[in-house]
Amino acid sequence: MDVLDSLDPQLLAHAMQVLRLCVWLVLLAAIFTPLERLFASHPKEIFRKGFVTDLGYYFLSSLLPSVLLSVPLAPLAWGIHRVIPAGFTMAVAAWPVWARVATSILVGEVGFYWGHRWSHEIPLLWRFHAIHHSAEHLDYLVNTRAHPVDMVFTRLCGLVPLYVLGLGSPATKEGSLIPVLVVLLGTIWGFFIHANVKWRFGPMEWLVATPAFHHWHHTNDSPQLYNKNYAALLPWVDRIFGTLHLPPDKQPERYGIDAPVSPVLFGQLVEPFLLWRKPSAPAEQAASARAASLPGETRAAHAADAPELIREK
Image 1 (cartoon, rainbow, N blue to C red):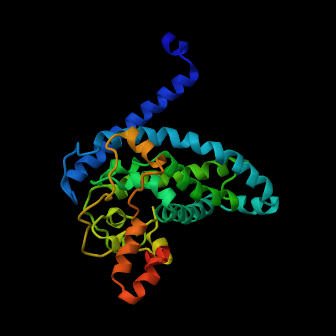
Image 2 (spheres, rainbow, N blue to C red):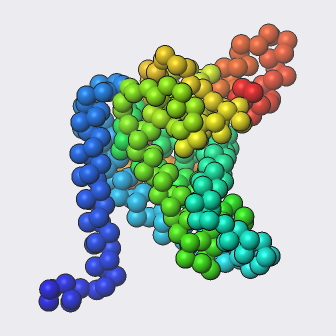
Image 3 (cartoon, rainbow, N blue to C red):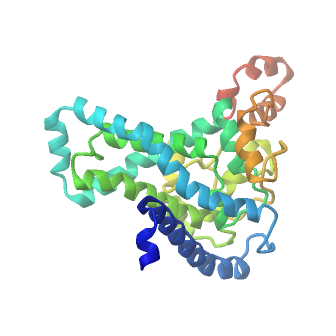
């Protein structure tokens, strides 16, 4: 006890946070490793290619983004809180907690959807998001393979609407906890939908995201299948915006991207900032494939409209 008392409180807090992450990692491994061995969609070794790198991302993605996110989010939340009419905020605050949480999940999901979609469609954002898609094997641990810039941007897209609509507010206890609950739910569910399991859930797959749904988002089978299934929790959001792809009796065969990516963590963190290196963007590949399938006289006219070419309305 004397040793603990002599430690710097901030250092001790960081050490406890790392310890909690280690405990969670053991629990995740205890749950998913047997399931992925027994019900594997694609059989693989436990310590597959990129495992050590993804292990590094597990700790980095759990510690760093929350710190980076607090820098823009705290003043933004307070600024929005002061701009929104007090009557509107009070009316939303009067809702039952369950209604606020349910609405926050829906609003956050739409925000996360568009943040995720923009990360595919905007080349600068794709540079960072491509790190997540570079995984050639999917399992629960790939959920945490995300560049901090990519993770912060996507979370901002999901959380800012909560504050704008008064669902999240720094002035009340519930308002402060709801954004945390939304992020926590998405993170926990993310481990499940990345899991290497071949389960299918029938009609429920159209209501809640499953591994079968999300694995198609990572497919590298064909350019025509890129840029699908952006939602993290609710597949019908993709149906509304025209990006749903969920065949009932088929699974992706290949994952990853065509562009070379550094195999080490430090290289993957640095590469997106090397703007002179052009990554292979799925938006561009899908547009090229679609244009190639058009009649010759219309191909040139459509090639200039890449964003529209990838949307199967």
